[in-house]
Image (cartoon, rainbow, N blue to C red):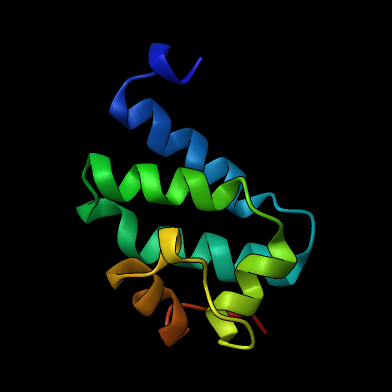
Length: 92
């Protein structure tokens, strides 16, 4: 199925998956990250994010909070940006 989607279609699907993780905390962290950074992504960045979406929320959140080291396949500029947590906007 991913082969049938356009690049923009993949971004739309990633946005949906990022904001529908199952817990509000994960939605804000992963969805907020997507909203902040996706506009400048190319193929490589989107593929990285799509792979991240396949991981368990608990693991992704631990990597972002730096309570566990991220696997080598996720290390790099995008993970460093995720670890800044300056994109999380919690409505009050």
